[in-house]
Image (cartoon, rainbow, N blue to C red; front, side):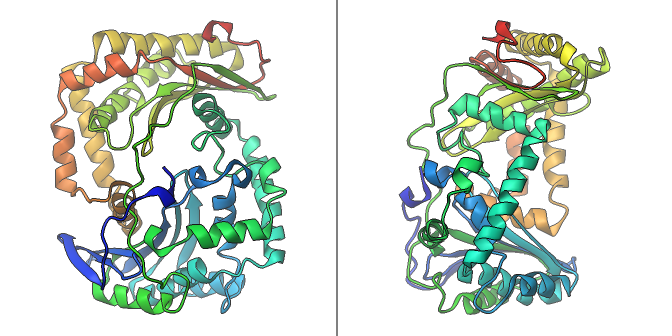
Length: 444
């Protein structure tokens, strides 16, 4: 399941380039590093991302938070650039850089004018391949991360999702651990441990570089090869395949987790095991999710907020991983209304499980799914992300027309069969608010 357990997808002895779709090209370097670009000549900008197929689930318990720690450190300086150089060189041309860490991958990205793409390539490749991880920077960022963890604990609307994930998978499991790590893991983590993780995990076969905008694929490939020449990412290798789903991640028996916070609002997440990333029913799930809690016209929003005024925010969502998935409903409400809101959520899920959705709801759910996807591809950053996620997560690229066709092909009986199975699964509950551990006994 970890990145190091992936089998090789191909073994290029030389540079191998092919066209995937109109405007989309893919090159595999002899190192195993993959480059995908989408040419959009009508724009005057370009987005670039360096995506590493390593995330928090690839860490040992003692190194929980190492991927996120690295996300901070790789912008702190290389042998030829200081942290100020990295930020000022991009900002001097009006560009922006940032990064984020997930459970299964880490991304470093930049958005610049098309003429400044060579600069962005050089800066990002240098940061990812050549960071020095200076001891002083490790200590500085350790303090920043500990403050970030504390700040997160002050955001109960965010915290409740972590509490739920821990309740569903288990706090000590790869998917249950926090992406940020905890104070107990970050405080003692040494520079040597972080550097070892960096050099053993950040390997060319695990890396995908993507770019979208007004660009030429061949030029981008040449820029990347030049930027990485002679670095640790310039050794022979074979590209990693998509993360294995051979061993399914197990979920815990249903449980209720209550975290006391002196807040003015109660935050609830009720959910269960969902669908894995490669499950063909994910398109039906997208439609079902839209009908249940995907917008202001959804069943949960209408029933809980519009009709009764019990919550400001209520929605459903799904998260998908290589070997597991999550389906859940969130609501934020007054503490005194929490039991009533929870009962209404359970009742609505039970009705949909038993009776299904209507043909009209099916059409609306499909329309939302298609519109959200297409409108989300209106900028170069989203196009760049689409390339990377297709390559890293699926090992293949589904065209926009094909994806829309898959959504259109979802049948009412498929959605209703999924609802009958999914929404009757054992549910775990996470609550953050002014409650003690004995609250919500009916959910236990």
